[in-house]
Structure formats: structure tokens, C-alpha cells
Image (cartoon, rainbow, N blue to C red):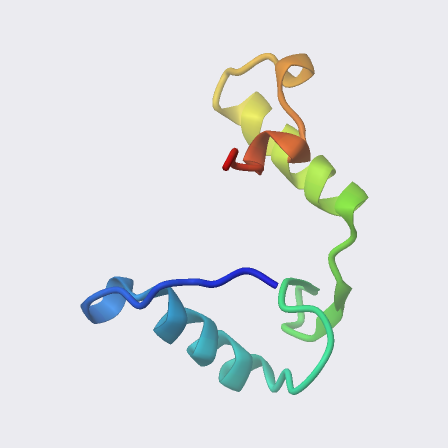
Length: 77
């Protein structure tokens, strides 16, 4: 579990997550899920699917995809 601090106004991550949970009708399970073209939710994202999504975004940004992975999102303590 990770603690997420409250922010101010519309940029508050806690508020955004609560809105997503309500809009998606998520009451249990994974927070991040794929969304089909018809708007229906898929199962929760796996570590592999997160990696695939990030590699695509890195490529669009012109970054070398070999230099980054899903582990690149981890922050040190």
C-alpha cells in the first residue's frame, strides 16, 4: 500500500482516484484497468501490460525504449 497525499483543487490525486473509482464502478480489485473501445472495463493491468504501454509512450516521445521500463517509475527512498 502507498500513501497518497491530498492536493489542492482539481489536481488532488485523492479526489481524482475517488472520481475514477465511482465513474468506473470499481468497488474491489485493481485500480488501473484497460478500457475497451466500447467503454467497458477490462481486467486489471498486469506489470507486463504497463511495460508495453510505457514502451509505446517512450517511443512516441523519441526516447530509446531500451533505456526505460516499468521499473523506471519506481522512486528511491
